[in-house]
Length: 260
Length: 180
Image (cartoon, rainbow over all chains, first blue to last red; front, side, top):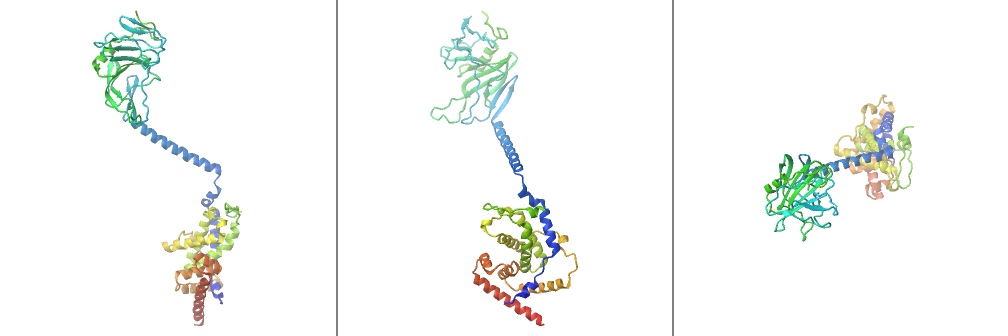
C-alpha cells in the first residue's frame, strides 16, 4: 500500500526545539543529582536523619519520664515524687549507709551507741512511751545497716538510718503522701506510708502505695540525711517529730566516740 | 561534553552503557512524530516530547535492560505522558515557549509540509482513539506491526488489518482532496 503521503506530511522536528530541549536536560542539575550523589554524602545525610530521629526519641522518652517522676527540693535535699508506679520499674529506695558489722555497739544511759566513723550519732533525748533501745540486728540480717533501733513489748520498732546527701538515695513518695515540715529549724519531710511489697502470687503486679505502712521522717544535718521510720501505725506523726527534735549532735563532725 | 552526553545508563544485570546523545538523535523524531499523529498538533507534540525525554532522563536509573529495549521503555513513558495529557487536557510539563517557537520564517517546503500535516491531522480526528494510537505507533514511532501488537495486546494480523483500514481511508480522502 502506498503510504508515502503520510511520511511526507509528517513535520520535521524543529531544530531549535531539539536543541533547546537537549540543552535544558543536559544543563538541568536537578536531573543530575540522582545519578551523581556522592556515596559518602549519602551516608552523611542518612546519619543526620538518624541522629535527628534519635534526638526526637530521647525527647519523647524524657517527656514521658518527666510525667512519672518529679524531684521536689526539701531544703538542701530532694524528694522523689512519682505519680504512678509502673510494674517492672524499680523505684530507688533510700538505702542506709552500710555500717560494718564488726563495729562495736555500746549502751550508754540506756541508749545503744555505735562507733560511726563517717557521720554523727544523734541520741534521742525523748522516745515514745513503751519504747526502749534495742540491740541492733546481727550482721547479715535485713536490718544490719540500721544505726539505731527502738522497740516496745509488741515488737513494734522505730529505726534510724542515715545516708549521705550527695550520691545517696533519696526518699520517695506519691503526691499528697508527704508533708514538708521542719526539725529544729531544718527542712524535713514526713512521708505517710510506703509502697506495699510485691505480691507473692503476682510479682509483676503494680505495687500500690499503702498509707498504713508506717511513717518516714527525713531531715538533713551537715552532709547526711537522717531518717526515722516505723512500719505500722503504732507511733503517731507528732511523736516521731518530737523524737527527731530531741536528737542532738553529741560528737564531732567526723564522728568519734559517742559521749559517755 | 555535557553531563547528558556522559551519562551512563546501567542496569543491575550488565551495567550496559547507553550513549544518550545518540539515543536522543535517533528517538527524538520518532517520539515527536508519534505525538504529532496522536495529538494532531505540533506544539502539543513538542510539549509532550519534552516531557517524555525529561522524565526518561530523570528516571534513567530505573531502566533495566533485561526487561526490554530502551526504545520500548521510552515509548512506555511517552504512552503514559499521552494518557496523562488526555486526562488533564493540558500539557504535562510546559517547556519554555520562547525556546521552542520557530525563530526563522518557514521556507516554502516547510510551509507545504505544515499544510499537509494539518490536512492529515484533520483527517485523523475521524478515527477512534485506539486506531490513532496504533497509527501513531506505526507511522510516528515507526514500530513494526509485531511490536505494536505486543504493546497494545492484540494480534499482529489485527494490527495489520486496522492499519490497512486506516491508511485506505486516509488515502482515499487524501486523493479526493487532491483532485478538488
